[in-house]
Image (tube, rainbow, N blue to C red; front, side, top):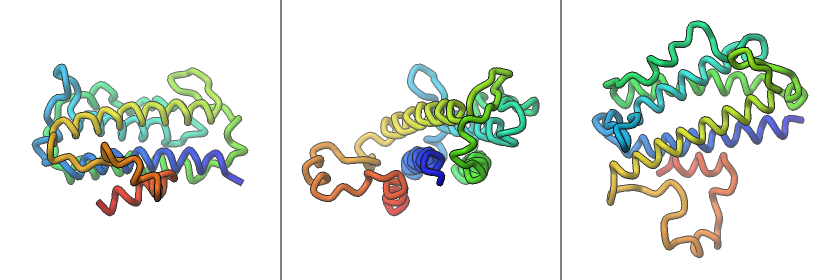
Length: 184
């Protein structure tokens, strides 16, 4: 049984859906606007997250998660990309992650992997990565909402609608939440 791995995968997919729900509302030009305080653009955040997934989860159980071919600093370079180019790169990183998760079982969770030479149990590496993804997805959603201002479509319960939502909660499971974002 893979209850833990399946739960971790569902949470990753929930965050993927949130980011994609935000990105879907943006223009190509919006994607490259610097974040608050001259911070990273949404394009840079997506590029970094996809690069991180490629590095960490390629040959996940057998090699260090910081691959020698990764160019982390380049992930943070300002870039001009179209939404299609960005989503293609984004999907590639997620495909590596989801493929690695699909190969794991709960029995693998106590195995050891390394990131930058530091040993971690698989469950620790997964939780660390999931927290990293949620951090950057939060940045993506925050920036997208700021860029869209009054034209923002809520990705969760809109303000003032908690009671209405609680009558029929539809986003309590990660898969249902991701699906509802794809339909909007």
